[in-house]
Image (cartoon, rainbow, N blue to C red; front, side, top):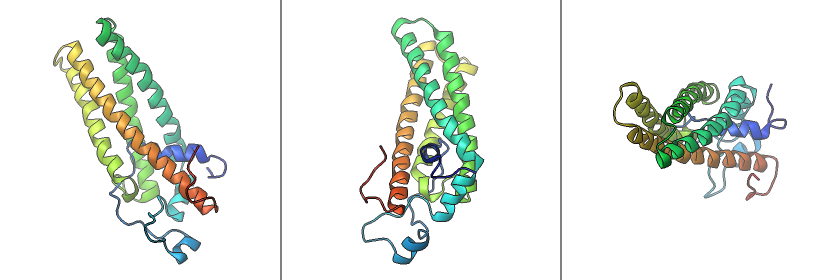
Length: 205
């Protein structure tokens, strides 16, 4: 079983799950044990995970899957971005740039589907769980742009330059979405530091 102590970084990386788990920033359940009894201080946000959700997260094999897929997708993105930029700058390498975007899109589909399963396990709903609502909303835009790109390639819509510009738009949205999840990763780490009695303002390194 995955544990927070043993794989804290990997488990928090799961918070970057691109399907995300998210349903608005509505009020969260009371925190576990001591915090639940004391109640949140005025002006203090609710923790990202309840104790029960944290335990389900740590025990789920989908946490490891997401922890592997998220950095893999980012690595493929970096390579593909370089190939797309090369084509736009030189007009060469359209086929390899196209293949790289297709691979990136396939990985996106996989991570979104598995992330949705993870969200169901941890939060009890397939999409738009309260902890990650806006991240999931933006993920839909990312998915739509990547899918639109695939459509232009499959149906021969537009020329290579137009297709690559659409790919860049999809990649820009992906970067924003990734930043959203990184911020949630840091929030989860702060919550865990507070739960262990660390300084209230401490953030992940």
